[in-house]
Image (cartoon, rainbow, N blue to C red; front, side, top):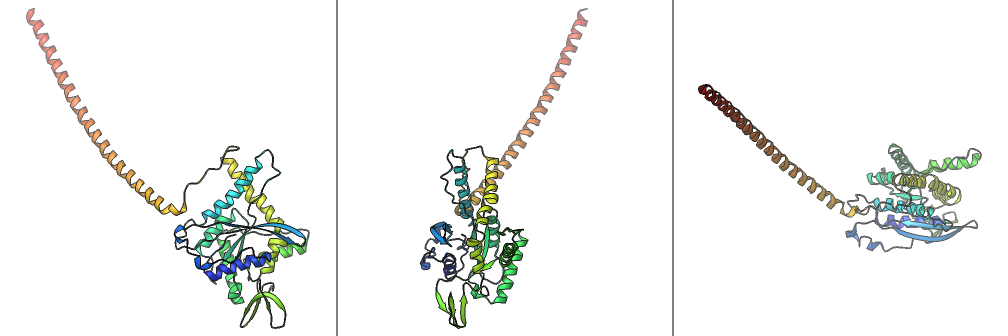
Length: 353
């Protein structure tokens, strides 16, 4: 679902991984020369691709959500918001359908798995990767994937995987973990093998190439040999495909239903009345800087007005004290005059006698 873009070859590689996973051209070739034609918009797009697949006579309605534009800019502040909003919108739509009198015709567009493609840098996760993965992991089954695994030596790839796992552990990023079957030991062992391979290193290719020993396989041909897509000594493609389609598809759906969707539904039901619409968010990441500038300007204006108010208040207090003092002086003068009048009246009465 989420595509981390580094360069044009990396974008083509992630397209190839999607097509290779489902053995069909779900992601059509793009003209990457126009990749930055919408640079001024600074927005992450959401592309929805639907297809019907058949796996061992079992038909699957598949929806792939692509996110062109993600992390393409120097300033990627809040670039994850369209992804988070899209996930929440699908939960909201499903929850509103559940509240209707007739619920048999529900359309489930909830996202059951998120493939987060990590660039094969050989170092570790970037701060943007960490922030986005933390936010997505609370809403969807997150599955980290290293694309273009054939660009790294086996030892370097092993070290890179260990570094990514360590960062995921330190930052408490929740990745999807297949449940362990306590009865079927073979199934539990397979689940443990899948967890040990995360993040999955994959090679994407729909081309058939011939190996040095004469076999025809899907892979990429290089001067030094062939990187085979379905060779577990070369990459983890078969394990990723098994996780998504063959052995744990139902577990992904169940996890979405019982964990992520339930968390969203419970949070919304605690803060909203029954049938009440979702509170809309009007903050647009593209105008975040302007909003912050206006907020700072407003804060400065408020502080200035508060300073003026304090000066005015101090002036009023001083004026009140002056008036009180004048009033006390006048009151004393009145008392003195009253005493003099009373003394004069007493003298006048005494002279009459």
